[in-house]
Length: 93
Image (tube, rainbow, N blue to C red; front, side, top):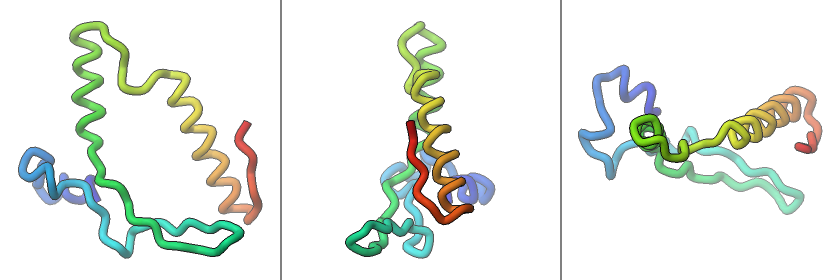
């Protein structure tokens, strides 16, 4: 939803308290051995990442996400993709 809002001319600074919420139809579903449940999305705030990244570039502080963390996220996304495509549990090592 954040990308669509940007394309529509909206900006996070217009109303930060209302920015970045997904509609219920876009919420995820958590499937566990106990059953399935709809999970509301957290408020999106991608702009906070870019603000922190810019600050790290300016003053040499730690970036908001380290290269190691980015690699871990990619491993989880890859496993989720394979799991969905092959309908099986994929272990992330």
